[in-house]
Every structure is written in structure tokens, then in C-alpha cells.
Amino acid sequence: MQRLRAMIRNEFLLEFTSPISLFFFLVLPLLFTAAVGAGLGGMMDQDADTPQEVRIPLYVQTQDQGSLVEALLAVFPEANLQPELVEVLPEEQFGLEIPAYFSAALLNGDMVTLTLHTLPDNSSSFAVEQAVRAAQGRVGGAALVAKMGLEQARQAGVVSTPEEELQFFREVLNEVLATAQQPPATAQVRWAEGATITDDANAMATSAEQASAGQLVTWVQITLLGAAEVLVSERLGGTLRRMLVTPASRFVVLLGKLLGRLALGLLQMTILLVGGALLFGVNWGRHPLAVALVSLAFAIATVSLGILLATVVKTRGQAGSIVVGLSMGMAALGGAWYPLEITPPLYRQVVQILPSTWAMRAYTDLLARGANLVQVLPYVGILLGFALVFLTVGVWRFQRYE
Image (cartoon, rainbow, N blue to C red; front, side, top):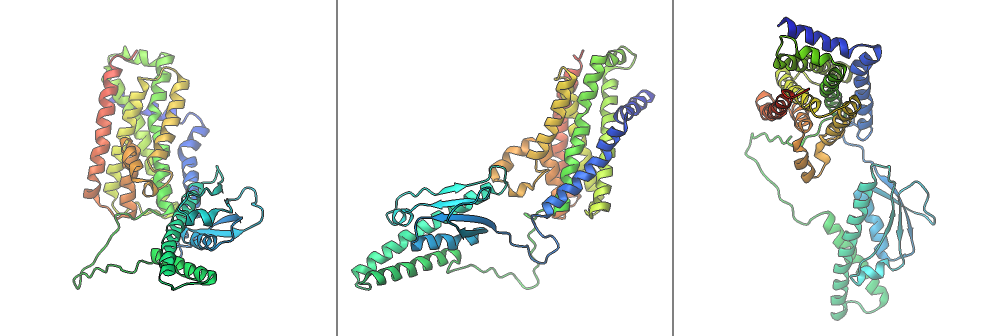
């Protein structure tokens, strides 16, 4: 036991060898939490009674002045785009070129190519592209319906002059577009008197909650996976070999390293949880035992992965690069930098192979959906399953570690 305490104390001494290390361990994660929370908060007004609608400017240069162009421009605002007709597309802005054959091609059922100028470094580029595609498809479908209606009107003698045909076409087109926006029939569900219905299964965390949980996962992963750097450095420096020839068994040496790094991670978690509550108003105290169990299971899984990595990498440079790269990669993919709720279903399925995904899902359920201890126990079990796999392979390889 004394040997284990000495090894744990040594982990703390190694971690805080300089004021810079202390800054990275304590201060920088809280600064990032504040910065990320402010950035996410800028996307939505959390204090307003209703969300503030944000429209993305879209500059449109068109060579077609037909009614279908007017219909296309009228659909864009429904997709949070604000179109503006210009003669020359401005630089560094979203721009759309509509060719002269746009209306004629749609009426013939032909494909139309619109030229969309996006901004590669702008996170809204994908949303703009999808909105333009959807608007084009919607107008094209409505145009074909209006064209068929016009043909029937001609056969029935309802219209006879070009002016009447144009007016009829526009009226049918607008009716079809309006019907697509507001379906003529809707279903209404009536619940028994006194029943209370709550649906928070898809509730998203606030910007502060997302930032607090996400930065906790990001930075604590770096600390816990840092077990790989420590073991590789001690192996290359000869310290580990000297410890392995002492009366202490390899298991005791490995356990000491694991517990020391785990204690560091749990300390950092505690600081970030308390900091998130006091500095950013995140309600971590609703179910403290549930938060503690999720955090402990995530820490054990991550430090076990760090032990496994130590038996794979060969140099200090490799260890440092892999620790930082893997930590950032797992955090980004696992929803620590953005809500998983905004990602496609297939993506959410694929990233379930990462412990960070399950940690973020558990934290989000606790913060945004009011989950209790029983409801997060499956997440705890999955995280401990990761730990068991990582630790089993890591211990097996460490027995052959030189």
C-alpha cells in the first residue's frame, strides 16, 4: 500500500513539474469552456422567450425573369435563406447563378444546373447547399403539376389567351407551393383529461451545458491518456525497468500508474464540474451520484486505453502525438464539440464505438433531459465494458513489456 501511495504521489509531481503544466491542467480547460459556450450561445439566444430566427444572405444573379424564378426566390426564406438579386455576385459571400433556361427546362421536366458559390471555411455552406437543392426540387415539382393543370385547362376551354394561360399557371403554381408548406389535413391527438405529456427525449443541452460537458471530456481525455506518455518516458529513461526489478510485481507497478493517472483525471473532472456550476451556471448537482458514476466509469475506460497505448507506441514523440490527436479526435467525433442530435442517424450509430460518445450521451441526458441514476446506469455499464476490454489487452501486453 505504501508503494502504491508513493507511485500516485509521483504521478502528481510529474504532472505539476512547472507552472505551465498547472495552467494547462486547471486554467486552460475553464477558459475553453467559456469560449466554446460563448460561441455556441451566439448561434441561439438562450435568454429569449422564442428562438431568434437567423437568415443566411444569398446573393442571386439570374438571367431568367420568369415566374418560376419568382417562386424559387419566395421559397428560400422558408429555408432560412435571405435572397437578394444582384447584377454581379459579391466575393466572399454565398452566391447563386440562375441560367436563362431555368423556367423552360423545369417546365419540360429537364434537369437544371444552378451554380452555387459557397465558402469552404464557413460552417453554413452545407446547410445553404441543401436548402438550395430542396427549394429547386420543390419548385420543379410544383411547376410540373401546374403545367399539367394548364394543359387540362386548355382542353376544357378555361383559358384561351397567353395572358390567361400565364395567370392560370401562376395561380396553380402558388397553390401547389402553399399546399406543400401547409398540408390541408392535420392530425390532432386528444389525451384523457388530467394527463400530463412530456417529450424531452430529443431535448438538446444549452450552450453552457454542451460546453461544460464537452470540454470536460476533451481535456480529461488528454490527462488520462497521458498515462501512455508517462510509461513510455519511464521505459526509455530506464525508470520503469528499475521499478520492475524491485520486489513489487508488474501488477503493482501497473496498478500504481493507473491509479495515479486516474486520481489526476478525477481531480480535473471535479474542478471542471465545480467550475461549470459556479462560473457558467450549469446544473451538475441535480443527480450528483449519477454524475459521479458516469465520470468514474469514463475515467476508468480512458485511463485503461492510455495503458494500452503505452504498450503500443515506441517513442516519446509518438506517444505525445497519439495522446493529443486521439483525445481531440474522440472528443470531436463523440459530440464533445457539437451536439450529437444535429448529426445524421448513421453517424450517431458509427461513433458508438467511442467511449467519449457514451460519456457525452450520459452527460447530455443528465443535464438536458433530467435523467436520474437508474437511467444512466446502462451508459455506466457500457463505459466499464470499454474499460474491461482496454485493460485486459493492456495488462496482457504489459506482461511482455520491456
